[in-house]
Length: 370
Image (cartoon, rainbow, N blue to C red):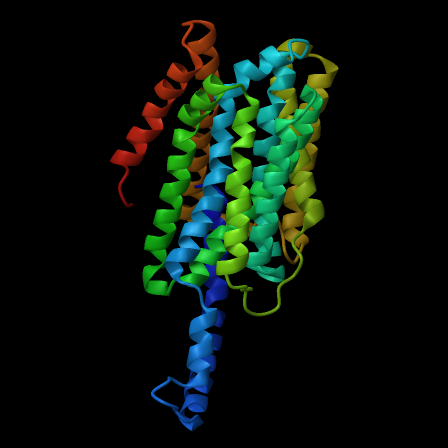
């Protein structure tokens, strides 16, 4: 799924120990109360009926969460194939500037993912999941009607924030719905749906752009988001993390977002501004300073953006480092291959999308459990 999801899983396992103790105590109280109730006409005790009515099916939770995760991850790749068509709609905008249609979404998505996990644990996973769906859908609508490249970039920020709220809350809903013995299988299914959505994004984008234009890439999210939000309100139950939860470090999250943003800005504009120019050096220096601020806040804040103590776990550090390297290669090659296939080899957009789908599909097929 995403490099920071493994960190969130670790946090959830720690919190879940206290949650299981509370759940066992609650179940014991319910059993004692049920023994005192009278069974009428063969009906089960009232407490058991209420619990059965209010608790949604784990499969329903997984299906709805998978829809939310899929729309978030497919949007990270589907817009790549539409990039040449977007460039034709805004010919006055340079390629480096227009690349922020992709960068803005991915930076906001990554920066706010951990903070969104803490917000969901405190204010309710279902509430944050529905709000993320609604925000993502509104952002998709605004992107579809964007009158300029600057407006499109701004609206992609809204989309990225909605996606950041979606993914960790979807994961938390699935973990809460399944018993511990089945959680690994449920998370594997959720991850498979996200990976498949990201892999099929170029093909789907090529089909939509061929049918109309790049705006249809964003329009397709609207009915899916509305349907998922309605299903979530009807079928999902609210849940929160056990114990007292603190508000995540939002200033640290913003510093992390600006650190990545200035780093990407310096790299993206390096050739246009010249690598030895004051603007490029200033962007890289600002990224280093903001990165140091993030590390400083992580060491002192009670609810930091990143739990630096997890980096002491060798397997955790190695797995995340390899994930970052792999993700950098994957997301980098998707855009460069689109530009090469369409601009140099003159592939039609649909053919280019199909060509880009082969790699992710093969990876999903041959991947096995660790």
